[in-house]
Length: 453
Ligand SMILES: [Zn+2]
Image (tube, rainbow, N blue to C red; front, side, top):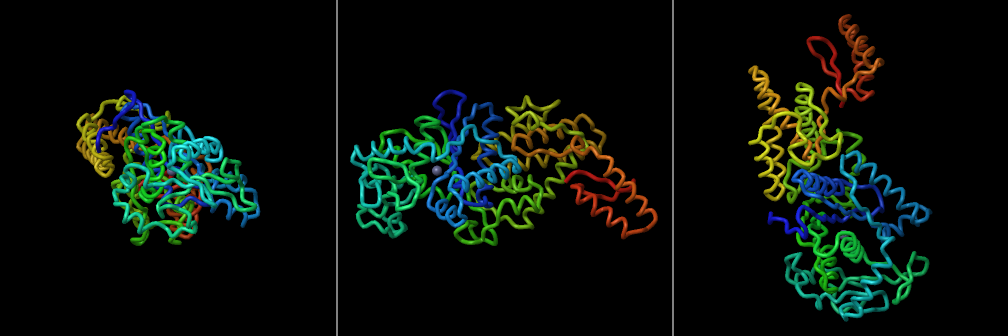
């Protein structure tokens, strides 16, 4: 990864396209949120001050249609979906953005930009709206890295015959009767999606902000078009771009439009909330990932190994006080070499599979050192694994969280009694009851052992 070119030393502005709150978040939303959460945490771990901005698109065609289908006002519909969004992001351990601009709060500023572009002669009005003339924008297509002809071939057939080029995109959509609208010099209407992000990112982060991120499917046309407006307006836009790869299920791209929609809420209901983060970390951010019960189960098995380490060495929760801002956050002595290897991986275009491998290596080393009686080496390796996992936003669940309440302790005793009496049916029923209360139940030589899932 090219080194970040910063505007002022130590500070990074990061803009990530957020969700359109038109329904239930899907796995692709979870992936981009986790990828950029990991990036943000790593920038913080590197000692940088990060301003993370991610928007909410709360006005859009589908929102209008779906709110109408439900028979509720648009703002009520978007508020319900946005609340669900944050609930799920919190469950995934994704840090809340520093700023969450809502498109509807920025319409006035979008109208100003569109007016500027019209005045400069790069945007024009038709019967349906205002469009940007992309052929008047130097370097259009650079981000998509495709010649204009191939972009043009892929452009949608447009209803508006007044458009000068099929690639020209809408900045302002004139409202049809009954649609929500704002007053503008071109008649009542609403802004186009690409205009939202360019206005909000430049407003909150300033010109030439360091990094713009989003899913790979946003590269073209969304990001290309965001950039085109900034260029046409004579402004420096994002200095660096990062795009994460697809989520696939059975080899197909996950998206609502393909109909293979699986919600994040379903995934969280059926698995450890940390498993998706681990799965995302196991692949390079640009590669596709496959989310299936198998890959999630493999991630849970990895988590179990790390949790076991946390219990064995009574590791503390390094995320309790917020994301660690460097190796100083560690408790005790560190394996400096392992920390350096971790940093080298993360600096290499965010090689999270390499970084994660360092964490698991440390876990193995800690266990074998402890088995060999090298307590100091074991504690150093375990503590380093804990720090590096925390830097990736992975919370290990150790003894700290496993306080056993009285009811559960009683169930454990009853189960041990049932097993001693060879009453397997009762023992199984008690196991089910404990599992229902959120415990993992294991049989050991000393009897029933429980720990939090
Ligand atoms: Zn965007």
